[in-house]
Image (cartoon, rainbow, N blue to C red; front, side, top):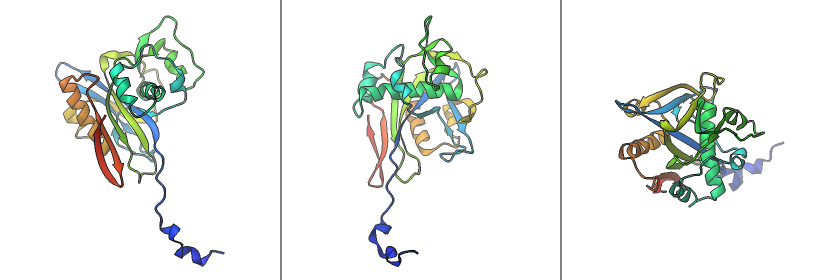
Length: 239
């Protein structure tokens, strides 16, 4: 039997606690063609309960194995310093590794260096990457932005957005890889084309920042943008 007094309980009027955001990372790949720069985006599967059918950059949450795999080259010191201002050096590196791993899983593109003696891993997330004789490399990654999903969402992520030139793609195995159920309709879009797509608000925000950085060829020490909410209101800071 229900307790009739519960409806008068002031605790029933309290808002539910916000979901704690999970650490995630995204990679913006810029291909500099003769006529225009292009950025890789894909459409999320319609079956997803988080941003279905939206066009986004490849990326995903940090996996425990992202802490354990050693990269061929580490983050640029300025990028590492900017990342580590609000986290540990270990998490900073893991975020960058997650961006490279998730990009491979969703696109078949490997960012790294060829190795005659490639590392091995028991991780089901990293083993397919390493089997191609490539070691992940972080040295050319730039940090563009950070964004935390608003507190009223049922899924939340504390995401860092990295950017890299397509010239650092070591291998493309997209035709060999199994179809990803994460991103569909992968395509290289010009900035003008990309801005017209059905984008999440944060992707549009980061896309504009990436466009400015790409056009101005900024240094890794150049601050990026941080979007978050405080007391229900949106804020932006520099990172």
